[in-house]
Amino acid sequence: MAKPLILWRNARTRLVLASMVLSTALTALVLGLLYVTANRTIENETRSVVTAELAGLRDEYERLGTIGLMAAIDRRVRDAADRDALYLLTDAQGNVLAGNLPRWPEGIEPGSGWVNLELTKLSSGEDVSISAASIRLPLYERLLVGRDASARQQFDRVLLRSVGLALLAALALSLLTGWLLTRLVFSRLSDIAQTADDIVSGDLSRRIPVRGSGDEFDQMAQTLNDMLDKIEELIGNLRMTTNSIAHDLRSPLSRLRQRVESLTDPSSAASDREADAARALAEVDHLLRVFSQLTEISRAEAGLGRDEFEDVDVDTLVRDVTEFYEPVAADQDVHIVIEGTAGRVPGHKPLLAQALSNLLENALRYAPAGSTLTVALANVDDGLTLSVRDQGPGVPEDQIDRLAQPFVTLDPARTDQSSGLGLALVAAIARMHGGQFEAHNRNPGLEAIITIPR
Image 1: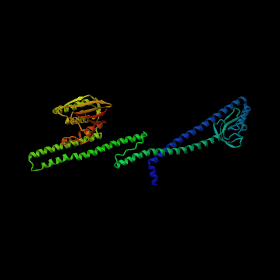
Image 2: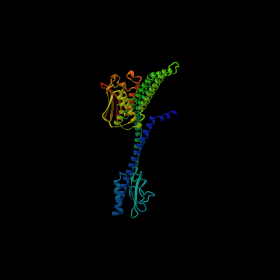
Image 3: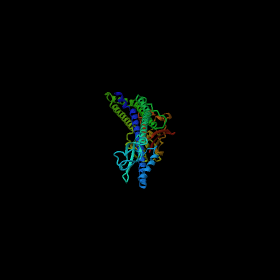
Image 4: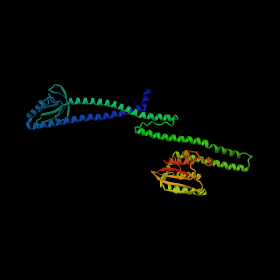
């Protein structure tokens, strides 16, 4: 009992059965309509012929009388010897005057419409099924004209047998079609399931096979593979970030612990304890900034905040943020200029402002005194670019790809001042907007660029 239940729960079995039932039902409906239509067509044709013959014989009666009608019936009987035409003319008492039937059917009143009878045919002496119509003539003679229904009944049997064979063929064909369909579908689903099992087992490099047919399964496989690429990238970034947190936060936490220990040392001078307290607060502030930036990166990578997108005037945003940093730049004897315009773009205004702020802070950190820092805007295909270029020493070419990685600080002398998360947050914000971050050496200086689609 368990096996049939398991078989029925199998999706492949249900799909094959559903295909078979639907195909067979559709075939049966079509063949049934064909059968009914064929029968009605034959019956209507027979009735039309019989009605026309009755009308013709009545005309003969009206022109030539009973004798002329009898002669007309005799001629038709001779002509119908090898056909299925049946005629009977009787007087008012039921005596046969002409025709190829032995007697008037019992219980049939002339003019009662179309009837089906079982009578004996004079020419062959065999009982036949008859479909006929009758009329009463003016002198009370009775006229019946019909057709032998045996041929039609035989045709019905042949047609029914053909319909049955066609249904069996349709059943077999639908079973084969359902099996082939499920084989195709479930082979592709099996690829997906096997890939998913491998990924669950820890092999994040596995991808769903693309067979090159270009069909919907290949399109779905490619979409899922793109998703898996993104997941693998995010997990890789998560691992790298976790390792970086464990490595790069160890030093500030160790320094903080030392400051706190010195604060609890009763032998320390009051001035030393004040200095240690200040340094401890600085370490706490640094850790808080790190965790705040990590939170912002995580939110941007997860796409949180997309529901807060609005139509942002990038030109106005750039002017506002740049004006905020002009006093800082002036203190360093750095001049900030804005080039180009970009118009409006859908985006998260506070995060875009944060990204530009991080770019400016990074550029001011390395811009030499007396240099110019350029903020450039430009329209590109379906989007815009926002770049910040300094005239500093630039970055070694083999290190440029690491700029947007979390906790990467290429200047070892600044590890205490920078968490290495500024450009990582810029890259995350760009990806959140569907864009990208890149950097290039310009000799002199470094140009950091974010691209945002419209």
